[in-house]
Image 1 (spheres, rainbow over the protein chains, first blue to last red):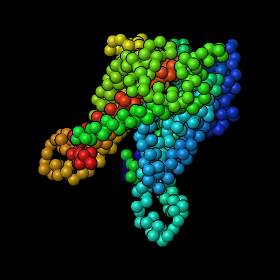
Image 2: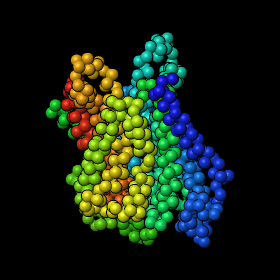
Image 3: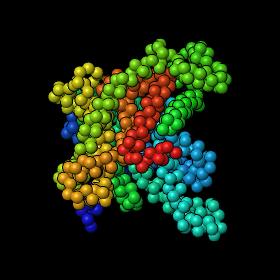
Image 4: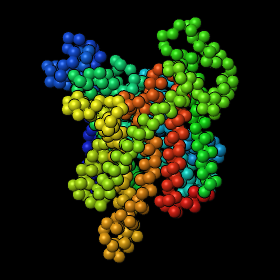
Length: 275
Length: 308
């Protein structure tokens, strides 16, 4: 194995470890968390890290920071997963149809993508979220509505190129039905690109959700989401650094892990995309 | 060339028009738009009065026609909060955002491109590992968290820099670093891979075989040819800086367009939101147009495609 391949696999392993830790935190939060993440205890307010029973300290209402960070992983990964599935399905189907059948609907769809891409992603998701409303479900819908374009474009491009390959031409020449060509020959060859885009979008969605919650939209308190925890921490930055440090570190490490896994998947599945 | 420019400008106008239309209908699809335009704690009879005054009792096509005819003249109505022309309010905030954006962009290029080039030419060296490690980290660290941590260290603990607001050069430091961090990371990584690709080209081999000095091989034969993917990404990212500005400006209380937009969304001040959407999409598409024109200069091979 060459040095570069080793380094890539090493980074992939680091990414998998970080991502696995985030998944573990999310799944095992009820077991791992020492306290109820939303239960306030004003007598325990603003304890620094290392206080008895509160290894990462407490917030202004006496809620345990460690428990809230662990439960925050649930919210982040849940939203990330739902949004990625939603964008992959919606964007994938639209891109598949636009690429396979072409014609004016395909053209119209691509123009729509152009329009949507003429607006910064985070601002689009924020605007949609402010209009459709707050909460877990709506933030997922808002992010998906802003993010499906990437899937649709990549899938359409792939379909256009796969359509020209010999095996598809041969299947068509043999009189194979269009539906069969689409599902048996085109879709399996497009699937790796969908997986790559989805893995690269996953961390984008997690960070965007946190940013939108940070701005006061998206997930609302008292739900322990990293973004809204950071938002609340701003008022206490002078006296309680840990309220900003830990949720943000959890978010950054999760994003790093998912990014590295995404880079690694891209290298493994499609050398064409290799950076 | 002129025909191309005209068609691109027409496309820009179409894009701006469609995005405004989308926001217009989104606001109306989401239920009673009056409730979006008004504070949450308003009385029922006031709601009706407002609905009449803002023209929401008219049929939808009439409302849309009024909106379009206003938008064409740059009239998005009056800010519900500031009682002033919405577009003027947005345009007043634009310079602060551009100032911050341009400074962050310069910082990005001054940092990311040299790091990318050195990492590529000294591939596998310590510099390469440290530089690319920092880039991977920079991509993962969310800007708003970086901002909070910088404020904690440099304002709260050390007292070196102001926590926010606009003023002297010191006010620029933290917002620029936060805004630049993510883009610098991506551009550094792309510069590295693009330079590495170019170094494998035959004309670089030829230049080396001719016995040219290494700095000429890199400076003259490699860099201009590596520039196209970098300019593409830089162009896309320059537009995204407008999105990043939303968060950075909010953290550092920077009186720009991004902060105004967030406040308008929070206050349900939709005339301002519409005006902001208009200004942002115009700015964004103009930046992309400028980037496309740059290609022709960088790579004459693309000029023919452009002309078609």
